[in-house]
Amino acid sequence: MHELYFQKFNEKVRLTETEQERIKTYLTYKKLRRKQYLLQEGDVCKFIAFVEKGALRAYSVDDSSAEHIIQFGLEGWTISDLYSFLTGEPATYNIDALEDSELVLISKSAHEELLLTMPKYETFTRLNITGAYLAMQRRLTSIIGSSVEERYQDFIALYPHIAQRVPQHMIASYMGLTPETLSRIRKRISTNK
Amino acid sequence: MRTTQSIAIIGATGNMGSALSRSLAAGNYRLLLCTSNLDKATAMAEDIRKGNPAAMVEATDCTMEASWEADIIIVAVPYAAEKEVARRIREVANQKIVISIANPLNDTYDGLVTAPGTSAAEELQKLLPNSKVIKAFNTTFAADFATPLIDGRQVDAFIAGNDGEALQNVSELVSTVGFNPIVAGDLAASRTLEDMQLLLIRLNAKYDYNWRAGWKILHQ
Image 1 (cartoon, rainbow over the protein chains, first blue to last red):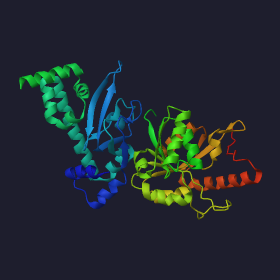
Image 2: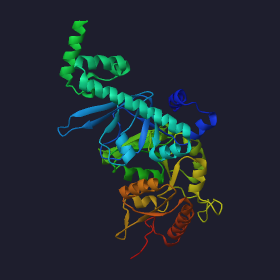
Image 3: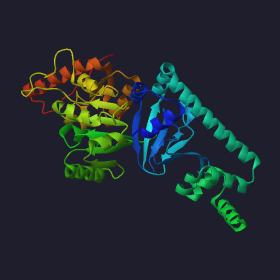
């Protein structure tokens, strides 16, 4: 229910038994079935979700109803519409489950109270946000400066688990490509091997 | 809210549980009907879907699993059974809205079994210290759910609780069912609300309202 959450927490910041028990009182445990929404665009995002088990995606939908995947969330990762969570503005992302999932949710009020009262939680949050910022910077650099072949190969090298669990058309959406283009790239890469 | 919320109704096939479930099925909610008698819950889910094919409703006999999936938990069991329910859901109900609908009536329906200075809702909060317990739906009879209008007027439904956001959320739920939500105060206001229903039950017996009675605050 919260084993992985505390494992990841302790890897970054070591907690005592008492501190762990205290954090537990703030957590919401939520099960989501495949295809169910955790968040729909237009609602305010009131939580950060940590994935204990399963897989989720965050995506936006454009005017022509095309989906653009912003982020995947696999075991041990967090997923949220951070802009909406931090500003209280309506979410621009949808988040749904790609597989049956088990989540640990941290609500806005729980998050704020823990930040104020528990320095270790603040450190854990800072490290998570820094990690997410670096990942986003890497993604941006790759979109601006790399060829699509390089981007796909980097993606596979960096996230081999996603490639195995997520359908190709979603990976194409994450990379900003059509499924046909991605398929051509994969073919090209395999013939060049 | 656009995101569908899941509601676990524990004791869904009881008198109040069943009335609540049938009304809530019309809203943007996914209902998990929990009861130990799975056949009965399955038949009820089918019956709800027959009347409303778009209803998102499922039957289950596992209270803990359903509460784990749920965003909101409604404890629709008699007061005496709440302790056992709380024991089962304690961990998965953490930080979630738990609605207490029970009135702690004695066997002869002429008094409450709770000690003065407390209420069924406050006792449930003690058993689930990390949940957001909200008192709601205790001042309405099950018969009121089918038609929340009595004598042409919309019945009021009182709500009590300590968490502002949870009160707002439950007010929306009460409106969906068709009652007029009125926030009465913090969770201690449940004492008055439970006493109010004791009075209504006694008046119902005395004047034979046939369970078609409710509260309405008249105001300017």
